[in-house]
Image (tube, rainbow over all chains, first blue to last red; front, side, top):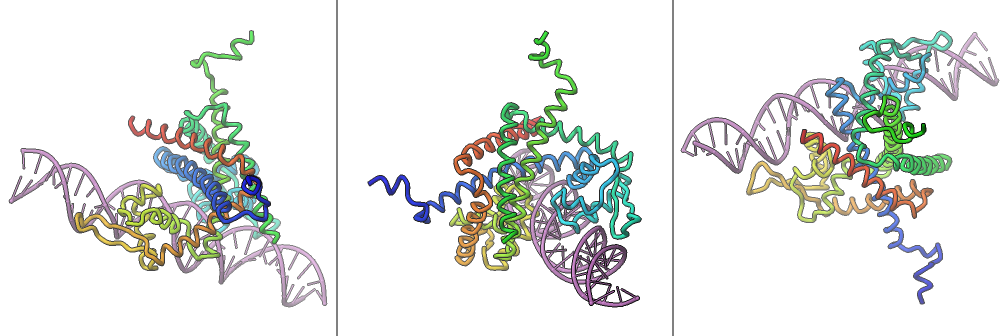
Length: 171
Length: 171
DNA sequence: TCCAGTTATTTTATGCCTAAATTATTTCCT
DNA sequence: AGGAAATAATTTAGGCATAAAATAACTGGA
C-alpha cells in the first residue's frame, strides 16, 4: 500500500509535487537575490561615498586592467553581460574623465580599441584594494573554510543555468 | 620550523595573507553575481515576452498577495529592499492598470493602504505559476537533493552580511 | 563593380534605481 | 495652544539597464 506513495512512476508526478519543486527552486532564487542585493547595495554605497564612483564603471576598469594592450570595445558587453547600448555612455564618461582611451582601429573603422590610461590604472588599483577589503569585511562572519565549497556549488548552479539557456537557444 | 607557517599569530598576518583572503571573498562575490545576473536576465526576458510585465511590478504584487487586507505603502520599500521614491511610479502604474488600489488611511492622512484587486490577484497567480516553472526549468540540472543545503548556506551568508552591516551602523 | 547581407557601434524610448530635497501631516514638548 | 521635530510619501536629478531602430563600415558573390 505504501508503494505508490514511496515511488510513483515519473509520469504520475502530480500538481502537488510540481508545486513543491517550484517552491524549493523559488526559495533558492530568493536567497540568491537577497544575498546579492545586500552586498551589491553596500558596495554601491561605499563606491559612491569613498570614490564617487559606480560599480559599472569599476567593472569596465576591472576588465581593462587584465588587458594591458587594450580590448576591442565589442568585447566589453560580452564579458560584462550587459547590452552594448548600455556601455556607450559609460565608456564615454570614462574617456572624458581620463581613465581610458578609445581609438578607432586602422584595419576596420567600425571597431574601436579601449585601453586604460596610467592614471586610470592607478585609480583602479586603489579602488580594487578597497573592494576586496569591503567584501572581506562583509563576509567576515562566514567561515573561511566554507568559502571554497560554496564557490564550487555556485559554479554548479551557474553551469546548470547556462546549459538550460543554451538548450533553449537551440530550440 | 613548520610552526610559523602552520599557525602564525593573528597579529602577524601579512599583506600576502590579506590579499589571498580578499581574492577568496571576491571569487565568492563574482559567483553570486554571475548566478543572479544569469537568472535575473532570463526571468526579466520571459516576464516581458510572456506577460509584458517587469520583475519589480511582479515583486510588488507578490508582497500584496500575502496580505489579503492590504499593506501600508511604507511597508513595501522595507520588504522589497528598494528606496521609497523608486516605488511611487511603480505603484502608480499598477493602480492605473487596475491591479492594485491605493486608499488614504482615515486615521493618518499621510499613510496610504495598497491592496490587490481581484483582477490583480488573478493575473498574479498566473504569472507566479510561470515564475516557479521557469526557475525549475533553469535549475533543472542542479540536483534537487543539494537545494536545501545551498539555501541553508546562503542563509548563513545573508546572516553574516546583515550582522556586518548592523555592526557598521552602530559605529 | 555593385549591391545585399553582415557586423560594430550609437541612438531612442522606456523603465528601474538611488540620494537628496520637498510637501503634507502628525506628534510631542513646553 | 503653538511651534519644533518626526514621519509618510512624492519629486527631482543623475545614472544604469534593456530592446529595437538607425548609422556606418565592411564582405562576398553575381
